[in-house]
Amino acid sequence: MSLLPLLVVPLLLTSVGTPSAATRRIEPGPVYDGRSGKTKVSVPRAERAPVIDGMLDEPEWGTASVLTGFSQFFPTDGVAAQDSTEVLVWYSGTALHVGVRAHAAPGSVRATLADRDRITQDDNIQLFLGTYNDSRQALVFAVNPFGIQSDGVLTETGAATGGGFASTTTRAREATDLAPDYVWRSKGRVTDRGYEVEIAIPFKSLRYRNGDVHTWQLNVVRTVQSTGHEQTWTATKRASASFLAQSGTLDGLRDLQRGVTVDLIPTVTSSAFGGQGATPGSWRYDTQRPDIGGSARWGITSNLTLSGTANPDFSQVEADATQFSPDPRIAVFFAERRPFFLESQEQFSTPNRLIYTRRISQPIFATKLTGKQRGFDIGVLSAVDSREASVTGRESPLFNIVRLQRDVGKQSRLGFVYTDRTEGRNWNRVVGVDGRLVRGVYSVQAQAVRSFTRTGDESGSAPLWDLSAVRNGRAFYARYVLNGISRDFDAQSGFIARPGIANISATHRLNLFGKPGALVEVFSPEVYVLGRYQYADFVTRRPAQDAQLHLRTNTRLRGGWQVGAQWLREEFGFDRDLYA
Image 1 (cartoon, rainbow, N blue to C red):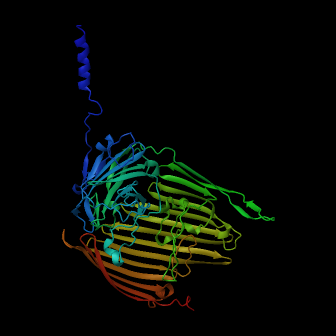
Image 2: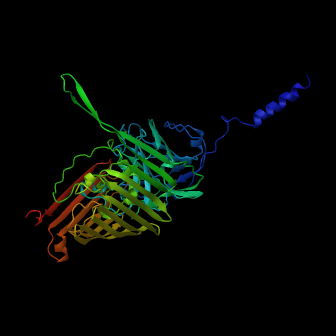
């Protein structure tokens, strides 16, 4: 009897001194307020993978880093966002996990069960993830309130934005290339207070530098359709030549596990043709020999990938939509849609589309190496095309393409391109250099290229050159372009919409911003002038063949309404050779 109290007391002490998991207090994660400049995020790590169901109820979300303090970016920057947004970030050994709580007035959320990459008319959240921390390129992962996905790559090249009736809708950043599709998971739901979305991005779907500790750039953009506003986590300014350079960072990512990244896609294609036999009521079938092919991809390292394909089957690729060109002098462009060529397509991007993989119509074999190594972006592609793509129908065209880019400073770069298409004794080679210099709101881009072609016993060469300067200010935008393409310039591995011309153009646009809450949010008058010359006439200083003058005004009103007007004066000349 005397031993009973001694046995009970230790048990009670154990129960009081060690709280259960259900009653253990969870320490909340740190808060990073973008408007306060707290944009260097220390990301917590947890090993348990949550269920992607749109419910941010796992314990890991309670300890995640919280990104808040969003700013309005469009149409007016520099002011606090009207809508409250919280982005939760943590990572496991195999994936980056992001949760979103987007608060909104009841009934104001716009969401549909849209197709992939078709969510621009819905409310959406966009993650700009720069895994190389170079302020030049970022992977884009976007979701609408239901978790419908849109993804792609944003590569800053200094391309023009705006123009036309929609110039005030320009986001002061370049468009995202939505052609690539990545493997990631998302789920969302609309709530009484707005919507919530849960996202998991596996590390094996990303490319990043080798190392023990990683720092990645991150910015989050929220689009609110009810007001037409765009909001960013960092206090991003329109007056900048780079949108990505204004991102925050995810610091301290360690021991990332990609596993063995090997993809094998074998294909077997067979067909049978049937017809009526010799006797009435009988049928005869002729089965063709099956075609065997496939593709393979090997992630050599976290930032270097080797891919190959042999006799691929592209029957599942989306068909091209019909296009109509109002100008018969300009070739019609069709975007690349084949998966093998889409992967790492950004590594082969050049000004003036000197690389156009659809020139490889039906490859018998192709291989490519892509990635980033010691500050160089690398893209190497070799392919043997079908004989049906040759001029004679007897030789198989051979393609060799090399694209190298070198980081220079924080945002500038230098690039080199070489393409070679050989068909028997005939060949076409293109060699060029290009570069972009960025300083504050100013950027300058230049390109010099020369083509070398041999057809039969004849050979020749011709130049292409391009120079542009941009001032991307908040109140004043200006762009000046001077380029020329010789009539004899030939890029058989690229796409030149119209050779034999030279262009001089200038764009000036003012942005006049109204006060917060005013009826007029921004008023933008714009002047655009263009002179287009036959290349030979430009060299000999003869008058322009085409001349254009565009006067535009665009007004954005409260609630997302737009009113625009424009007056156009255009003169077109006839190509002497085309209309001879």
